[in-house]
Image (cartoon, rainbow, N blue to C red):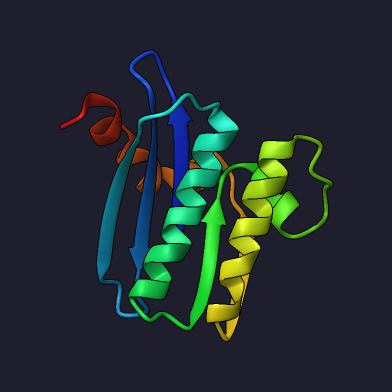
Length: 126
């Protein structure tokens, strides 16, 4: 699962892309209708993607994101210093029990182009 969130002048949005072992793709775009920072948009994308994975009955999940902050906090390598981020991390970890295995992997933005490409759809409300 690839996730990405962003904030722009129009508002915030979140994008999720699932790629199956057979290379089948499922794309999901979410408009965020409450005041959100870029980090909150990233967390919303991750959280919604994990919830979708549970609905899809996925049992082993690799979670790829280009937000070093979110990935390192979920991997417990960095502390959460903001209450809202702490709540997001706790909620995301609560969903981990639905999987046999879940890994959070940081990727550079250039490698997250699949999720970034969805940003134009979310941002333009297309």
